[in-house]
Image (cartoon, rainbow, N blue to C red; front, side, top):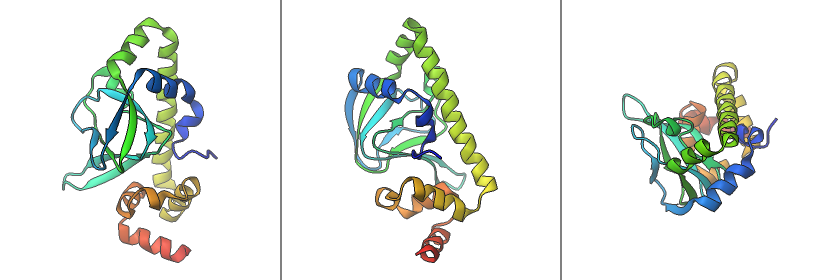
Length: 188
């Protein structure tokens, strides 16, 4: 089992991506609630999170926010690989806390892809790793109980409730905040 919440990190050259963002990117501050990218727009940056947390959200037909992903300090944030194809984002990526992110313009990454076939290989490997992580989460949603998903989530990030509000964690687990409160109460 991975120690990383976002298991794709175990299968990519994280050092390459981190160094690329830190050396060629621009450090930007995002306040809590500020979007990195808005649903329906094309993402212009990929980033390395130097501090803070981000959440990936979609909005239901009733307008409710549904958290489908979380990123932590030392991880990466991107609408990947869609930003490389100038496709509109299907999600909003929002700062869940104040963040500092080393932002690399997608245009610069595209230029690197054109100049260096090794970068294309890294992008393909990264895309496959992200897909695998998301597919595992999709399978878990149908094959594991909310309690099992909750326990797995906490085993990977015991400090999760210090980083995200209960409603965001419940949304990510696809349960109500009340159900999550009951799970926590029964465990403690």
